[in-house]
Image (cartoon, rainbow, N blue to C red; front, top):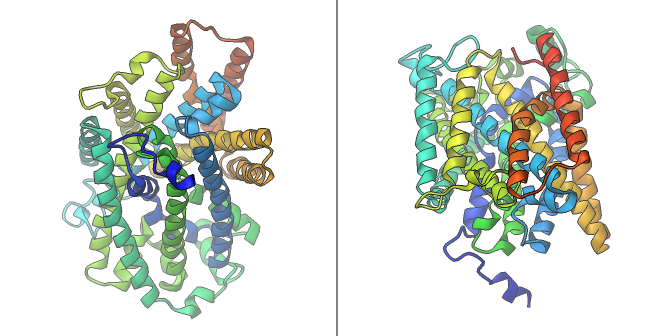
Length: 494
């Protein structure tokens, strides 16, 4: 019976199992994996980093198990965004979907910033054209860098406009290329690994702490503090884990969504831990901390002098473009689904002859373009973009975990209830401990969204309830509170 069910084709010509796995992995592996080494080294010792990976691995395992359960039990729902609407009502569906939409194109801004940094590095085009693609002091895109990444933005948008399924196939090919590059980096790091360097001050209470104090005027702190500082960084690199779920309407077999998500998570954990922790035993800690961003370039050049830096630089370009492609597809599919559910106006699902949601893709492109320009004036465009991207998608993840809990309670499944509780606690506690300020700032992003939600409800001949209006006002007020906090520097943006 089970085999017969799993063999049912829901969408002939849709995205197959390996395409879904590729979507999950490629959506996650973008700029983050290449920045992990330097980011973690600046906030944690190898011992604390390993504990943080254990915590994040378990947290996202529970989320993946929840998505797998819901994908199998409720294949009639259009991915994780639809879980909020099904479980808690249309406004909550909008809040979840709009958070996902915001997250996707804010992540694209981070990708664009990273591309400009890499193109401007000494091991890429920066060796020939120093300072042309990115500002050497801030790492933010320079004028030519903005032009270059803008061309990439609209090139990817055009590709997806030509057909989502064909873009998914290309995305799977890119996935193979970038995983091979990361594995090569890990292999060279393993060969150059020195246990003495790795275990020296394993918990960051002596020499490593002194290095950080000399560089940043503040130490690593205790192990608990180090682990906490790692969480938001690590959460960023798991964005995309829900990719197969979001694309459920395009899946060849909806029954494969859950297993594809779990397989993708396992692949990611192996790659991330190898790429971020092993380098602690490759370079002296002071050099690792001082390495230009992204530190992976310096590490590879250290273990493979003469070609390693250039090789991994171009690998980063390919990887980011692949992830950017996925993040162009996912928000368009999400807003299209929201339109079909009456959460956004019908115009958001206008499709071209290739059956691509044209208006959604163009809106995403315009928003990304505007913020790429704005990012050139930020203190640290990359950190700001990835922080905002992370806290907004946590809204979607938390709603999915909450629906997993509610649905499992209705079904009387204690084990699945436990998965939902643990996934929900991890998401909420993780973002409140590490990114509450950015979460407040993200509330501002919902203000223009209320207009579209109200218009959609009018199209459905349904008004706003009193409870919905109160929730909208509360979120708006939280966003307003973030403005003075940003001005006085409590929320670090400019």
